[in-house]
Amino acid sequence: MHFFSKKTFLLFFVTAAFIYGCTNNKADSVKPVTPVTCDTANLTFSGDINPIVQQNCTLSGCHTNATMAGGYSFETYSGFHMAIQNERLIGAINHQSGFIAMPQNSAKLSDCDIARITQWVAIGAPNN
Image (cartoon, rainbow, N blue to C red):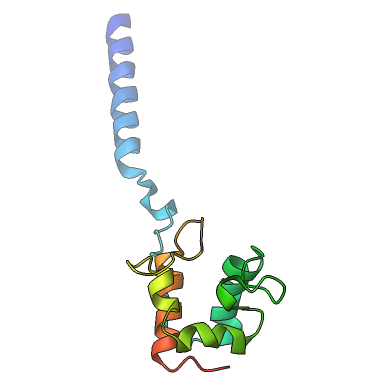
């Protein structure tokens, strides 16, 4: 009878563990992964484009009033707009053949940053 008790206890324990493991679904506690999206709607120069430009073009010391790399200063909208008018900007940030890849000696901008700049240029590059 003593052996039966141990066997019964072991069977009960294994069954309880199995049932608990199968019913304790932790999926409810796992947060879903939010896909990263690139918002290209309602772009503004001051809120969306200029921060990209400042981070990648002027803070590096390249396109400032003092250095004027390539003849451009991106410290102001008008300076940045000059690069758009001569149609060099989009080719440069996309690292297209025939253009000097920008940012120079650095990694290409993220796909989202390129999409935002390209879309902003496509809607007329407003100074907003």
